[in-house]
Image 1 (cartoon, rainbow, N blue to C red):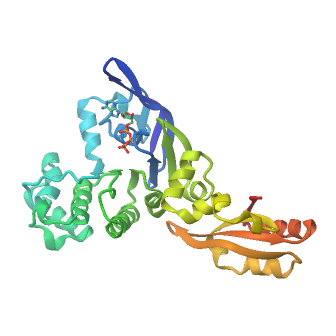
Image 2 (cartoon, helix red, strand yellow):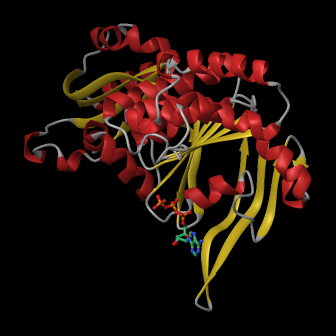
Length: 341
Ligand SMILES: Nc1ncnc2c1ncn2[C@@H]1O[C@H](COP(=O)(O)OP(=O)(O)OP(=O)(O)O)[C@@H](O)[C@H]1O
């Protein structure tokens, strides 16, 4: 659905060129939830805003459904933007309008529906985001989570194909964040809407996204399926973003910081596994059939979006041949293993 090809953006600040994006190439599929994560100043907003040309790329192309939108004239861009919804960190609601008035606003601007049809659509959207009881309140009378629900309803008013989320939960507490992420996931599934979001929190990526790109210094340093990037981060920036939100995974990625090395006698191994295997007693079967012994030093069973996963840090003791056989069995059951020391 979206193809970004060799996109770069340079700003001119006081006669100096500042590179915000450098040669970005990316593809996002229809119906996918795609996350862009990075530290402050990495280029996330510039990249997101390039998708509806709120920022014009200096070079490169942005193709939506095969059409290069960087060449669109004013009219085509106007029509395109009606099909791309956007939500913001600070909600950007109209304070003088009620909840219903805010949601009605983009419908009025498009001018495709009469008053009765608009009112029908507004009440549909209020129900979708769980705000039917609050239609006549003003933004100042709402909590942050409710304000963001209005932002989402407003963004969906013209039935967009694509929803851009600019740090949509950064101003919310953890519980409200979860409820907004659940709402976005529900909308993605029910409406088949493609969602592109930017965040600096790996937890948001882990809850909502199918794939992720990690951006640093205006370049994509790592990308892939969320489970792969989260469990096997390769770039230092990715590792540090994983560590910030998940100290347990951080410790398992770098056990030198987590364990008294002098107590280890055997081989330190990290296992990771995804899907149904998480709930099967494979490890106990493998070990029962082996002369090797193991001690669990650390472990977690959780999920990435709907995908269950496990990760274990084990100390394996036994002869080389016993351990080799254990590894062969782990391979046979698609349990990933890496010897840490
Ligand atoms: N309008 C602008 N004029 C000049 N430089 C800009 C402009 N917008 C962004 N930049 C610069 O481009 C780089 C990327 O900025 P961007 O806002 O895209 O990063 P970000 O990852 O979204 O950061 P944050 O998480 O802090 O919002 C930064 O160095 C920033 O200073």
